[in-house]
Structures are given as structure tokens and as C-alpha cells.
Length: 406
Image (cartoon, rainbow, N blue to C red; front, side):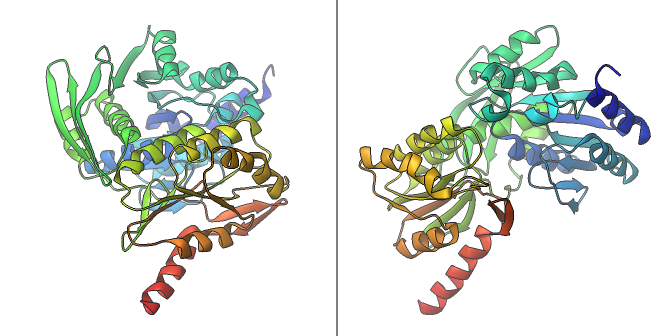
């Protein structure tokens, strides 16, 4: 065959009787926000009384059944097996995170999407794609096979998506550009939620969304418009947005008092900037940020991540993320000088578990600690070995001891 990956994807679809053709397919792509958007869309559809399957970074789901996820987007055989099981279990909709690597590798070849959602594009995965244009082109493969496209118009690449696919039905959203189809106005931020009016020609709907930050406005609007593109009533969808649940490892509050501990998956400079800038105005004490840079991945983004952290943190714990086969101390050394230069106080600790406990022991009344990079993950990859490390457990054990002593 001319392209074995494409042929294999088609064969896997045929083997399982092409389940994607029997489901309404929603695909989400972008650097940040895919997981939150996927869970939001699933939540909204379920509030509308629909049976929904989900594939993504945190886990795969068939209704309420949880299936562990190895990749953000599975290989064609597993992908079609999951879609088939979703259909046989009564699901009407399948919501998928579609990674740039999966799209470039034709894992989704032959699948048509009812709606494709674009969240944003910032530097990531250049170890694989080499250039931002290659990265962008890979993302656009989703929209070539989408009937309708929902686009974050505040992202420069979002405007490129809208222009490239102007012959299709493109729905744009923004929190600042009035030329978009839907705009967020009268935005009110707090540490727990964001309130805004979602305005379009002929409609205004009030939203009280239970996740903080400007990026949450984008996530909320993108998810809502995916349903609106599918034909659901605007008012019903916006009302449902007020009742969605949070997502594990996405600005997840682990401790509320006497200090605050938050867990977030942010592992790019843009992701860090988004979550830290959203929380910073509401921090009453010190803002302590724990993060690390991944090994054997795009090293150019490490200094950008350090820059994002230095802009907002009062104190930094510089530690390991997933070093993989790279020397973890050398990863830390590659960015520690930046904090010296900016005179941002920090502690460098290779052992992430020790770093977390040191950060927790440092907390005083009204301080906020955010653990960045792992989110939902309960492991670390060290020298090719995957070891158990769940920040939720570490924090829980610390708080159990803390409460006994206090």
C-alpha cells in the first residue's frame, strides 16, 4: 500500500465495523486545555441526558466505567475497540482528545468528526515535530476531517485555523475580540470561579463557571460551543456550565485551610503562565511554586517555563518532573541560574517527594503552594523505570500528620 499507517487505521476501523460512523464524534486538539475541555463536554452532554464515551490523557471512559489510558490518543486497534465498546454500551457520543503525534501518525485516519475544537497552540513537542509550522499542520489534520469547527479566536493560531478552513462551518469565540461569533463580556474573576456573559448575535447567556482563570473562560466557551454546534439549545448549555465538576489535576484544590495546596498539570510555559497568573491575585500569603522540566523533551522550553514561574512566585521549589534517561540534576542546573539572576529565592531538590514535603513544611497561614507538572499522573519516569508517585497521597499523609499535631 502507499501508506501503511493509513491502511492499518482503515483496517482496524473495518475490523470493528467502523464504530466511529455510528457515534457522534467530538475531537479536541491544542497544546493546553484538551483534557479539561474533553471532561467538560462529557459532563455537559451527560447533563443533557446523553450516554457518552471519552478518550484522553487522564483516562478513557465508557459511561461511568473507567479504563486506564496509556496514550492521550490510542493506536488504531485500541481506539476502534474502545469506540466499538462505547457503541455497544449504548453511548451516542464519543469525546476525544486528539494529540498532534496521533494525528501526524494517522491513528485517526478515516474517522470523520461532527465537531472539532481548537483550544490554543504554544511551543511544545518540537522534539517530535521540529518546527511550529509542522506542529500546527499536524493539529489541522483534525479539522480536515471535521464537519464543524470551534475555534479559540484569541489564539493567533486560532485565527489561522479559521482562515484555513473558512469554507467549512467555523464558530469562533473570544473574551476580547468582538468580531468573534461568541464573546465573553463583563468577566468577573475569583479564586474559585469565573462569571461572564456569553454574547452572540441575538443571544446573551449568564455563566457562573466553577473553575478560576482566563483560560477557564476559553475552556468553558469552547465546550459550550461544541454542544451548540451539535444542535443543543444555548440557554440549556450555559445553564449546565454552572453545574460542571472540576477535573482531577487541573487547578485541583487539595487543601483549603489553614493554607492552600493546589495540584495542576501545567508543564509548558504557557500552561504555567495561565494558571499562575490566574491564582496570583487571590494569594493572601506567599505564593510557593513547585515545578520541574521534563527530560528528553524539547529543552528550549525549559527557560521559558522558568521565566513564567519567576514572574509570579515568591518562592520556588525546583525539582524533577519525568527525567526519563536524562540526568535530573543537569535538568535542574539548566534553569537554576535564571532564578539566581532574577533574585527569586528557591530550593533545588532532585527527589520530587522530598521537595514536596519540604514545600509543605514551609507553609504558613494563608500561604498558597501549587504543585505543577504531574496533575493526574501517579508516577515518575526515572532512568527508563516507571515508579509510583502520587502527589495526592503525599499531601494527604502530610495533612493527616499535621492535623494530629495541631
